Length: 437
Ligand SMILES: [Zn+2]
Ligand SMILES: [Zn+2]
Image 1: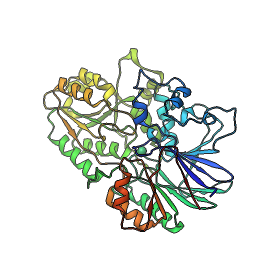
Image 2: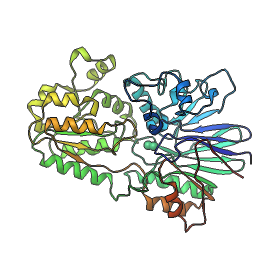
Image 3: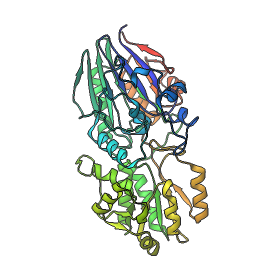
Image 4: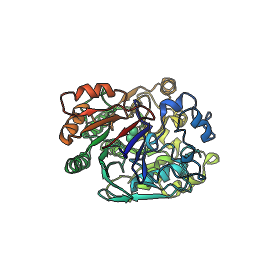
């Protein structure tokens, strides 16, 4: 009973995962995400933002364990492992003391660096001065009496991993966020195969979609975007999570198939640039243009983008609206307002509502902007998370002794849904400990 798993976030909510695995000799943390649910109660970007970690501790938004943040006392864990670069898994790494190294996939590190360059500085997520180390799928990382193996999985952001952790008292698998219905489902299958081989004692799994099951695919999303684009008589406008490369490629293909050019913002260009040399990812950027900004408002990182990418003036887009598909986030909607979409223009909303894993969307205000411009909205989306039937199949195949559902709001539902299996489902509480052995 020396090995334990403690849950400091991601319990009965979607995201905010913070999972501590401790043995006699060492401790590691799995993800250090931001909990939208608890943060939203007190803060709202960009004006009401946290200024110090003490306040976040007092409010219960981050674990009330001072040695996680200050370097004066003994380390609370030796290494942080990140499953992927979504904010609900990484959003509080800026607060961590600098002498704790952070391990992540190469694509995740590239995305984190790109986002750090283009985002407003925040104590919660700033990675400046942190030690980032990359791993690859199948690597075995040995830390005292632990052996950690990251295995790639398919999710709505490149560089997503699940982990298999061998401890002296049994093995743990942590899914991170994953899915079976995505374009790279073979990666998730690799993870499942590995879990089967290793005989997992405790499976810590996401269960985001217990009430949002849908049968669809990225291919279907692309076809729908293409159909809307084909019949649109004005400007096509789209928005989705900045690092969802599958979705980006779907919009890219839909634009190309219909003789339109894709136009993006400088911020998206930085994220795409950070991944375009990664052969496993396949980002298509030929012919993509970056929307020019008013000279007086251009930041230095944006100047670099305008040098590297072909750009286009908003006036040009405004004159030839049927020739473009513009990807723009809600915060930049004023630029579209200035372009003034002609009658017949449409907006394609391609994220899960009301929040996505990178930012919170102010849905009501988005609707007001569209209303003011006379632009109707289509919702075209497929989830980054595993569907209920697939999850049940995964649990059946792996046959762990214990399942711990996290990253979802319906753990009791999942418990009953797999009630016909000989498996114990343990629902954690914030701060609670589950023992192995
Ligand atoms: Zn997540
Ligand atoms: Zn995610």
